[in-house]
Image (cartoon, rainbow, N blue to C red; front, side, top):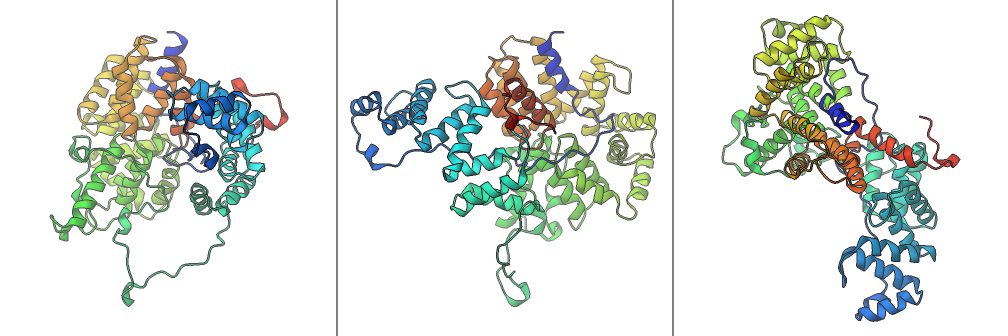
Length: 506
């Protein structure tokens, strides 16, 4: 098997769940979307009066740096010219060399993404740093966030908060949102005046969104999916059971219909492998009143979230299992043969949360839960059989388990089968599979984002593309993926300059 196939096969067996793992380290500002670094477009009326493209070209060729920057932006956005990132980078660089501040910032964006120029995050860092020190609020925001990821330079959260705070103080909306995240994580003091909460007894306004639909501090930024997803076989949970006060909910009530649609979308995203959605469903089962409240099911969902590198699930699970009577209930339900209880107990031992089961019992519980049709167990046990981890290696049986899970609606199983097909095909283009992975990524699958990053890096099933590789790895990394972080770190290290500033020891 060549190097490319070995790399992608390493993802097939990712998080098999048999090897005890440490609780994932939380990276700063893990969110479901990358930070908002936006193009800076000149607003100088000097350029708005240049309606004649020839005049703009003449001024740019004559060395006018503002015209050069404007010309680069027009090539980048396709305004008045055919879009051409190479020409855009050429002209923006010309303006940046003449110290046009916005050009330095925009050149940083191009270098950071590999648009029209070689991908070079270290050059990008220098441009953002320069523009930030010169007072540009957009650059201060980006520069601050670059100090949190541990890829270009050592993490420095104090400096990150300072620079993002300066951008927020200038009124930059994305920076304000980032400061909210910093405060929520205890990385920045909350100096805002305390708001008076409305008193329901006094007739004050009350939010129409019930507590059960709030994310308890998590960023609920789920991708939009088709409402039909709420009724696919992949949704293993009944939507109505998760409605607040569902027994008395009016079936045709507009609020109920809205909540039902939202719950259905989140369940679909959870089945697609979204760590945010998996964690949220676990939280619902832990906290909701009524028949949906189930600590064992909550643990099972949290464990599924941990397998996708959720940054919140480990702490929530740890608090849950320490509650009085949890293990007594878990043992009792596992003894009766309940698949979800066997799955949860096996994984609590596999991940080191509990030490009551032998390794053989962990394997047998997972196999029994898989045989009983519990889809998450079928996926996990199928991967174990494929890799030979803890059980006899049997590729045919492993693939059969994944196929059955995929037929039952498991997007994760389907994605892993696609990965196997891509690995076998190697460099042979397979646009249909790449397109399927993109759709799964859009539906919330972080695993798909990791795989697309690997495909675009090594030219598996598609043409190699550093910009697209970085884009997908960043999406996964900023949602908590350690695998994507490690892959990006490797790429950064290949380019890392020898300057002391860029040395990372952590």
